[in-house]
Image (cartoon, helix red, strand yellow):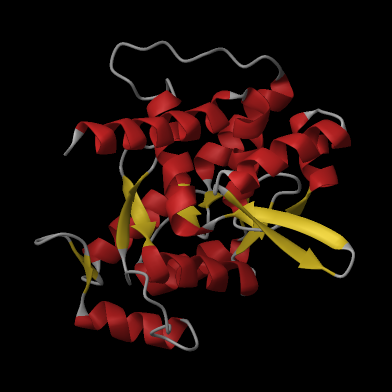
Length: 243
């Protein structure tokens, strides 16, 4: 690589790092990991800043390619600019988190509400458009144990897994260039959960079928009794009742 190319790539990396170095912008990107489009007002409220301040930050993120703008009538929404942007945010969150690091002391929650939020996110959450957290890893393990996923030569969906997905999700396989399956390192469990088209379809079905419900103003998910029953019947996954 020539010196000029290295300088150009270095400048691009520095510009991207600068975008996420601001706590407000980082908080907004983490909120958008729920896979949905948010308004500037919603993100301002979530980040605890004025709407005008939120708009300035969002303009920078859109201009830098991390977020995409969606307009519907007079309303402006923003979302993460696809899977690559979501992957970047999730990996940086994994690198930044203290939980699970050898020898690291977890930061003490600043309030009871913060502690509840952390527990909810660790239990089950969306990682852009697929399932993450303790539940996401447990589902991935159960699919592996059932022979629906194979890790022998990298993560692949087996023939049996393809049939299982066809029976579960309509329109399978999807017409998409994204990989059917992808291993995504879970930033709380420090183990992989299922991403890719299969992970997205599974998560979407779980929400649509009422197995999981979204927690308001969060990307946390709550497993319902119907979901607990469905996962036991379909994957042999025994989960403890909600405590």
